[in-house]
Image (cartoon, rainbow over all chains, first blue to last red; front, top):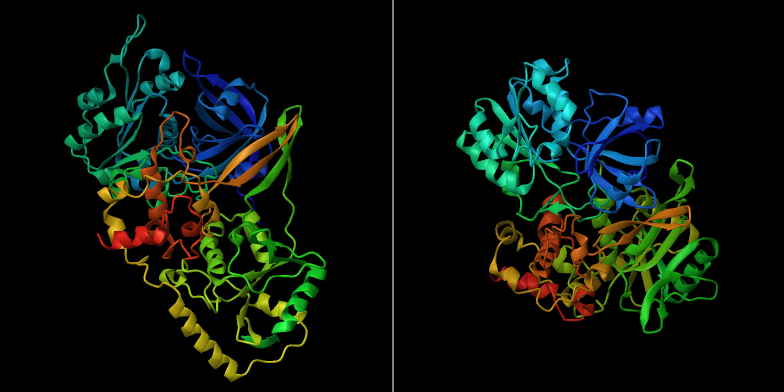
Length: 279
Length: 341
């Protein structure tokens, strides 16, 4: 019987410090055993338990895309015991992952539609996975217009800076990067994410919005999308809760009858409306 | 199904003999409590007792268990070993309510997608012999309110029913039939015993409180996550967690790491939704910040969420939480009060 609690061994191949505050890093992990990589078949939106023996585990969204074989990437903010340890390790360190866990962004449902991606702060990780998945040459024709609104408090807090530039250079992605407040070198857009969404005003026709960010951003962004005519069935987000097992047994991440780890983390607003407001 | 007769004075000997060749857990007296223990040579299993203080869930889902061990290497800490396999065992003297709890938590640990190897291994290798509650032991018993019965054989491999001067032994499962082979020659039960069982079945049912509307409150729960009633039940709660630890169906757990020098182990321990720590996040945010939310969670989990997911109430009516709550919070009253709203 396969033991879902035993982590898959991985090596930290690359560590990228994403922000000027240095508390958000991206970890590129490579599988020690080739067959584990083949078994780890995932889609954007899923997460994994990052496991460091002696410290514990932390559930983190997968930031790489399955169209980028050979490794997994996770963007992690330094916060608790496990993530602090992660931030102190160096390339070459051996650790573990358990996954892929949870459901995915509704890829099949998104096919043939115009996609609006809205992200705030460092909650752009599984959105990055989705974006890279959709713009891959094998998949791009499956999706319509792709609009991205991504914001951070200040330029130094934008993550995936190299990729932001590459996405902006493409003619098949409508990229809108914004900061709440710019600095001396910032030549891009200024403004809060909800306001920028209002200016960009993506059409709701045959469109789905996928939104991740801090609660305050989501609170002010949703009305913008309702005004644009997006139904609750066509707005998706991803929830976070404290987790341990990640497979619906340890009992702590339920929202009503659903477990965020097993039945989520991805939910449409319409689905969230049927659940209790306890997250 | 094989049905045999075991003479009363023979049962202790049969169980003791079984314990010579395999691990047998049986109820024994331990100071003021009755607890399941490994039956060592010379120990006598209790036949006449109410129920064990602890639910027997720990035989499949121990209070703490090592999930894996790891050791320091030059690259970090690496997996050393998963845990060893369970031994064949017999769990003797389980009450029908507790036996039913295994069927309920099988839904969690043996779900189609994610199998819990620790639980399943022990569960598959353990044969359960129940002692039916011909005389339901407590006034707090309410198994018949939650789809159980004092003479039920649900979740049982061998059901023993005290029919006076002997036991009617029903070998319910193939595992049970294997145990029959270890019990020596037992006479086949006749129709008179079957009739006697029916009589006892009805008498025992009359003794149990079947009036707790455990199923009936579901529609109210579906609609009333927000309701003033939830402000009324938690005030005296100390968040001690006794109800969750004693509950046969509570299955929540924590996973922690323990390190000694370069080596360590990952451990699973029972956890409790009654504690604020259960859901507190690293950010400081807690989706269930007060005892009110935690009591709502416990009640909703047992009588709504579990029903939504598995079409069963996550309560077997054993009454332990009622008996041992230090501030007398009574789940029967909560359920009844909800039904009167």
